[in-house]
Image (cartoon, rainbow, N blue to C red; front, side):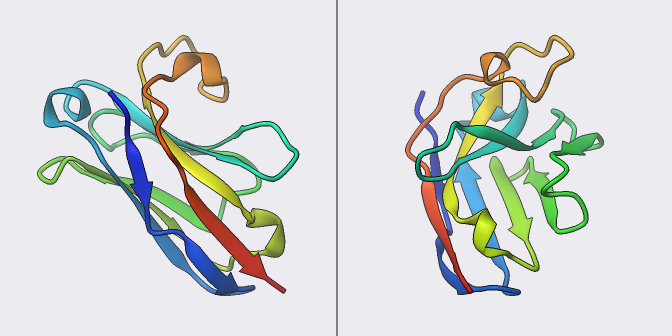
Length: 124
């Protein structure tokens, strides 16, 4: 299953964007979900994760206090609200299914169903 993130765009520093990720219901109801990002010339990195119920979340240090991950289980949709954006947040953002939680949710190896990401560009 490939997921499709959406909602990216060009925004000035200090602005906000909300990313969305639509997920097939049979998958969404069974797994936690995560957001990752990949800046030009850099490796893909963890941004945030949310458990299946939506009651537990965790963030990369770079995202804490500015980003909020959430999920709408009725709409089978994952969100990432990004506030106070910085130029260093410029990246392609991906959603993924947390298929193998083994205690290291920062690791790409715990995720599957990577799809096409959405580009976020933050201008200074």
